[in-house]
Image (cartoon, rainbow, N blue to C red; front, side):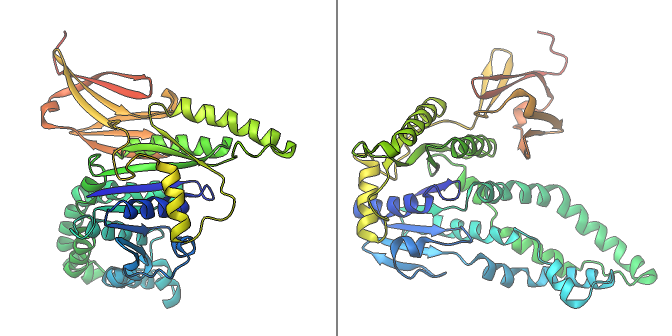
Length: 392
């Protein structure tokens, strides 16, 4: 089973690339499902066929699904929301306000991960192609397993015990609703839906992310940041798709400056993202719509390459011994020293790059060790650990 996460800035053509990748893979004999996690679904437009929340058959060995995460969210969040509504009502919010405020923005995206987890264990598929939301939403989606795992490990247990102890006392002196065991059980069921999804999506042998870009300065700049943040959270990027390139056959003077700009940006893409392979896709003569057109686009994009194969192997994180020291290497391409923050809390290393922060659980072999040095070399953060008291 292979999973491909296709993402990029809005408007670069990521849905077309995802749909074309799926269509091409199916034509090569792979049982393929393409899944949209973008709230603004456009897979049905790309295939020119109705695609619903349930799995839809598009052709031989080709399936599609546009996830209605909101529907799943409403079904699973009801027990949890009931408690929040009670608290907000106690605080003075009217019933309508309480209902609206009890829905945490963005949390419905969790259920897209739950479906991916289910598909990943389904023996009926050889390949899952994910048409992700634009990059900012994708980073938030893919960081959710880390965030929720931290909460369940560090905060959930103590919160449940405190609520159980304080409930009898508070109920005597205040009408403030205290979370019941049913509430905490609902939280556990909620989390169980995505427990383990991070291990699936960060296993480079199973899952790769592909960045779709246009040869434009702002698009390339965002793709660089996306590469950094995906690497921070342990996701493997194996290719960049340079899409909508002007064909050589377009020689009109009107496009001369545009061609020069694209040429400059394409050089920067190939230099900056090396050693990742850069797949080139020319601007099509007409809209790429329908299964046949998408299949042709996918065939042109990948050529002799197997679209489901792992096109590059760059380890987001690597641990190795170096004499008496242990070095943890974290891939942070395009990052600067000034935007990286580090902190150590017990057996966790907190790494922050710009607005994104990740908690890295350190192996038992580093228990009793401390960070002796941190260096950023060629896009990798090298952390050197030594035993406490080791002066060598």
